[in-house]
Image (tube, rainbow, N blue to C red; front, side, top):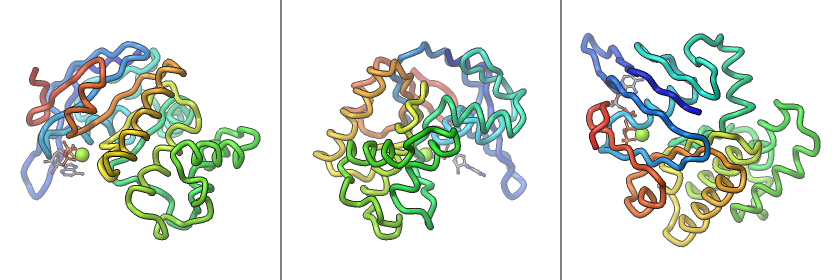
Length: 219
Ligand SMILES: Nc1ncnc2c1ncn2[C@@H]1O[C@H](COP(=O)(O)OP(=O)(O)OP(=O)(O)O)[C@@H](O)[C@H]1O
Ligand SMILES: [Mg+2]
């Protein structure tokens, strides 16, 4: 389902090279739950960004559902991502001028799905935000923004869910509830769930754990 081959991403910064992802090989089956762990700066977000096709690797290949991401145009990638991939970003990336409801219904509207607002409000209710539909991101707490980001990633029922520290801003009770939801929905939809986390309890709920050290896999 997901094949990552000899993947590297090198950033050039102030004349020096940062090997954020360095020679990574991973093969992930449909429906698998995978935790990516590793110290701050070990390349976890970079790897997720490459998997989402939001950045291009310096070297190597990623294929998802039999499609080679590296050979897709921006437009093809956008379409493919919209149809197949849900992403919870570490920094949320909510649209600041859209309400919680509008942020969650946007991916549905782009796909031309009917009853986008109804489905979006149902997704927001699942993460406990039925009373916050008209709030702008600036009028929400950090944990609430994180839950809007989770609802937005889930609302299209994607076959691949990528989540970067999805419980990072949530208290343990809310975190547990929202993570239960993430795992439940992934199982119901047979979605592949790849999550980055520093939380060992959450990592151990995944079928597989991949640890990154300085951009490379260390097991
Ligand atoms: N756009 C960029 N330009 C230059 N360097 C970058 C860029 N993005 C990330 N880096 C560097 O690449 C390395 C990996 O960053 P990345 O964000 O993937 O780490 P991470 O494992 O997600 O860390 P954290 O746990 O703190 O979120 C870091 O050293 C970071 O400073
Ligand atoms: Mg990160």
